[in-house]
Length: 350
Ligand code: KG4
Ligand code: ZN
Image (cartoon, rainbow, N blue to C red; front, top):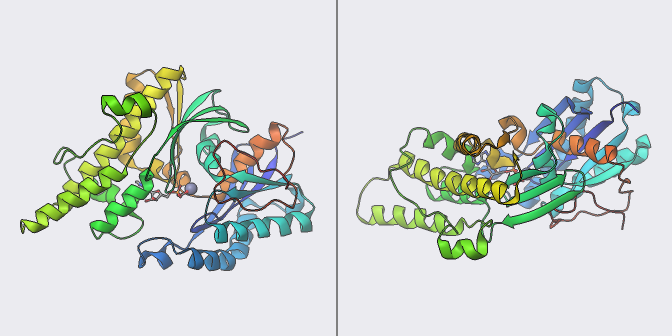
């Protein structure tokens, strides 16, 4: 069989996206974001996101099909994010995927959004090494993964015990009055600041914490430390050096993420590291991870920033991997699972 042609649908948060992929070749990746509708609320409003998905899904599909220059009859399968994510957002993508699968008579795969983030680099650099060490950093999740096979063998080595890295970015941006989403704006501000200006805490890195939480993360203490530091300055009537705060906060995040990733790779004897999730677009994280992987003789794979945030192409290429590995389709009766664990790549029929 020639390489599978898969249409992927993603609607787990505030991006409605349809990607079309043949093998590992990207044919289309259309994204409609409702981020501007949420900005004034300082975070994603689930009800607003669901409505935006409903309005955007058909036009986004039409754009993707015309960009890819394919006819639906040529598709081998449809893949859709089944979880994790916002329930009301997930169901829009899943309902659309089921309708298309039925109308076009195509097999349907309900897939894990987080695994999509980790596997998206296949679009740029082909199949992943087996095993790979995955650093997953998104708005809702931060985990270290041992990826034996992206289509079905994923083990979680550690994860955040409180906030996710992206969540910390969003909360710190809010307290600095920088708006939502926080990641891109802090990244930009940080480039003008001094990363050593303030020494913010590195969560779960003390010797005692490392005994129990060597491969886990914690960002809630860091967020509180930034808040306290800013409050203190305000009480003293001094200006807030926003760029320095951003750079110092970002340094603390990138330092912990990269140190623990390299430590895990060495500990588990995995030589290839793969970065994924919205925070993987972060310039300092990308740079420091590259430096530390090189120093540790590890190969690093980083998807280009445009593929790091939520998109349908990552779901489509994961669909290709799942089909190639011989998995059965999910059928038409599966539901959305807002808490789908990262270890479950394909959802089963209920
Ligand atoms: O993976 P993603 O697009 O959505 C989820 O699945 O959660 O990740 C969104 C997160 C947000 O918290 C956003 O602030 C963060 O990714 N983000 C960044 C950057 N771009 C997006 N964080 C740091 N630096 C960036 N350049
Ligand atoms: Zn995501």
